[in-house]
Length: 390
Image (cartoon, rainbow, N blue to C red):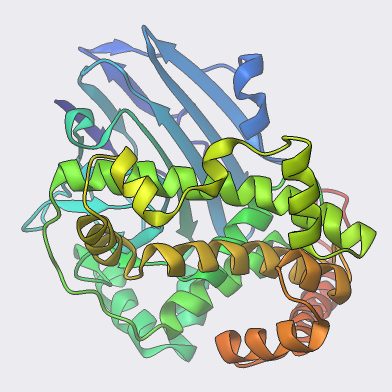
């Protein structure tokens, strides 16, 4: 069992200015990163890496005026006890992979943040407990540490943000959500855009603001339930398979869009040349059989963990990539429609509007207005450091 006391700070890089140790022996971080992990490096981020035996820690931080953004990847293979100490601050945690089981000082019970779930909390001190024997040895988190001024701005627009802010200003342990909530596909798409290796990183402020807006606007509540750890592992295996399969389908879809062919026609041709792995043709029943679990149990696990079925989860992954392309303008609508498996722009636009209450064009225009508004505010405040992007 691993116990970690993690108390982060908003103004300085956590790992460099914190006590991070195992058995009272400090673990030193450096900017030297193994080549096999460089694919995880985010543009503009300050990157630090440490290794303790077989365990590895990769932490990346982007400091902005209103918040500090941290991407944390822990790869734990030995059940050592780790401690990390910094001053406590409000923090939004979003799990991008794996599950983090922890306890917070002054809070009554343990909390688990599952893949695609989030928590927003404040405590003068925090104690994290991680159990690799329950959930596996790796997890990736995005943490956003908002400034008090930024929280006050959000509190003027959102009642729940104002309630959370009251506890923060009084220095009282406060959690906005009673337990881990599911982050919707729009939030996950924005995190993908932030994590891209290149592109419009000058818009990180816009992306982060949208993440908070989406989470505060969300009215969805998740029934608190305990999930069998064995089922969680099976669901994660299935989710990994679906994401890997979707990634290959994305590549075919992108080629199809560029050639203006239907993905089905290109996929058929690809199969003839054996470009795809045989298990891509598996059905849901095949996947359940492979995982040695019934399809009913697998769907039930997905419903508890992601509040959707396997089919719905795959559809959400597809929407997530489509949103990335629409917001970043990395492809035109015709290509995005082909990529998404739709026979025409019209059918894609109808499905998009049913899902997001806006057409793709309206969705892109909304973000363009937000980008322009942020750009104008920067020019009015030239003292802000934009990293040379504007």
